[in-house]
Length: 322
Image 1: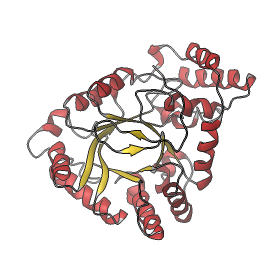
Image 2: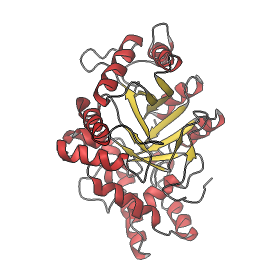
Image 3: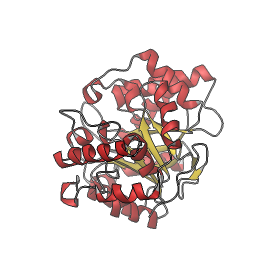
Image 4: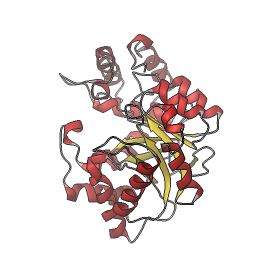
């Protein structure tokens, strides 16, 4: 079920959180450098400049994490906030609590420490939206729910007014669905699982909507293969996906080339036009990427093109399906 692509400056409500945001938000992962993931570094100067551009519009959500670049993403965003004299009115800064990078601990105490580290770097004493980040691989759902578990710590921060709303942010759809079904969270953030070549999150989106959760979809470009014509050696979602997804991206890029539409425009608008998704996060490592996103939203894509793109979607057996 789809909705029309709306103007970049229009506001949508993030479900029961009550927070308002634009249809596109900026993801802060590249701001921390993370050369091992992206294949290129982001200098301190570029990171701060990009954060300043993000915080001054046209989009009104900047999302980061305690772990991005070992804290560098938050540090650079914090410097940008200081340069601007504070977070602009109507703007949302979201971050995520992460497992201890040394011990792997991810309990209540670690959640509280992670929050303190993040607020110190950002220079904020309150976080509008605070996510539990990628618990899969660190703890089980039962451990997160248990006494002195990570979820207890998140709820404690929300109840104390230190976090406005809390969310669950992760990849593995089946496991993240279990977190959603606890009904403890206000917002869901899923990534790489609702794109032109993957629909793994379909049932997850349905469940989150049934609980009136806000929904954020990240990584609509699937690690870059949907931002441009795929290159030799490209992998969908940094290797999480399948070879057929890259092949499908090539077929999609070829088709779109015949009708004069950039694949990046279709990839972004595919997420933005989905009625179950409130906002779509795109990474940015330089200020120009934010201006480019605005241009991608302005590309007109006829209905018949969307029909053809559905036909070019790989079969379910080729999705991530986790």
